[in-house]
Amino acid sequence: MSSLPRTINGFLKLGPGRFFRQLNNIGDTKVGTLIGTDKFGNKYFENLNESYGRTRWVQFAKEDSFFSRAEANASQVPAEWHGWLHRMLDAPPTVDKTMVVPKWGVEFTENLTGSPQAYKTYNTTRSKFQAWTPKVANRA
Image (cartoon, rainbow, N blue to C red; front, side, top):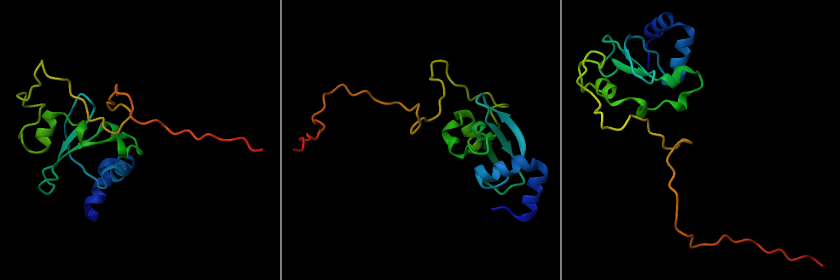
């Protein structure tokens, strides 16, 4: 919940488009310093004047549309930025390069469960049930 001065400040700094997009997507307005951007286009911000726990946040790349609220989720944040967002790392990955994905590791992908791209198993066993088809008799 925002106070009135914080809301007015957010409107003036963000502009009407970004202001209403943030209200629609996260239910609040946040203004801060851009810390970095990941390879997926997500932008990471920090504002040390906020109350503790609200100082770091992500603006998802898929959030740029006004009607895309359902498309953005936390599984779209790579591990190195997740550590910074949750205060496991003090320096962001743009400054501290110690969080390196091993070359033998799997490329990061978001969780696709519930989406059309989700993994679907292929069943090779024969069904134990047969679908019932009604037999219609001709009327006399």
